[in-house]
Image 1 (cartoon, rainbow, N blue to C red):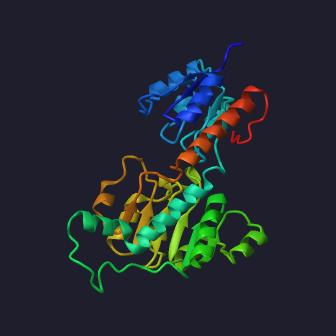
Image 2 (cartoon, rainbow, N blue to C red):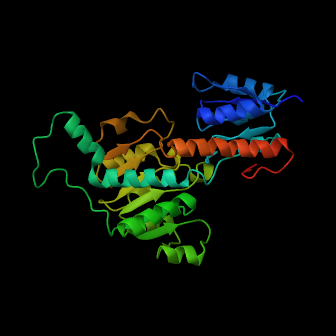
Image 3 (cartoon, helix red, strand yellow):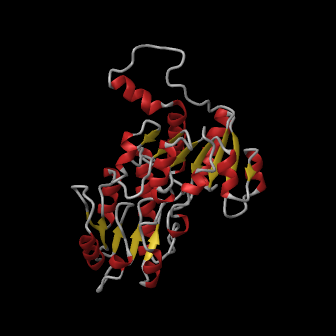
Length: 323
């Protein structure tokens, strides 16, 4: 029996790559270099399954290439705004993702950034490394207390709820949130949370705002200059969702002119080519998209892709089908 041909667009955990090689005719990306647009087009013409990541722009141009062989895109990650799902659907290409398995680790990173921003962690680290520290003093690098403060969440899915769990039960934080749909009362009661009717309510009331909404056209620059000006001057913005949810230029202005106190970012517009103005600011903490970056989680993500592929090639419905 001929094995389906499968391309993995980036380097995956070795354990998962070995499993895939045992099941399929697999091509690996040993150099771990992002594929070009032309290489992605060629991949769709030569493989039954392509397994992309957030670094692969599966645009309409790519997905509409002629003489396609591909039948499924098994995305390595929960977010899929790098895939033109309308084009995939029109071409009869199945798209799957990997929700659930990265919830805890991404929530941990959101809390890490919240604490780094509130307590000026990255700035303090640089201060020591640059040999600037002259010793303790009463007014050095005063930050903001986290315990007991109000955390506002934009989006209240799995990851946001995991953040609420850490914040409410670990730090006694009050939880308010905006979500496009209603949330079950038992979940709201668990965190003694308040669901607001608008994003603006969250922004104006919260001491910390953490973003947990999907990327794409509907949320592009959801956090813009007008909305940043609604936040408290002592507030902090945390983004572990998608970079394009925040208008980078507007956020830089907000940080520069003191509309908000600080920000913690794990994702960026046009990453890895983030706006260089961020690099010269002390009141922003920056991480290189580490949300799910633990050995356990990345292996679990790969296994989830494998599970979806197995179902698809067995003629069954993949568990995590999005198109």
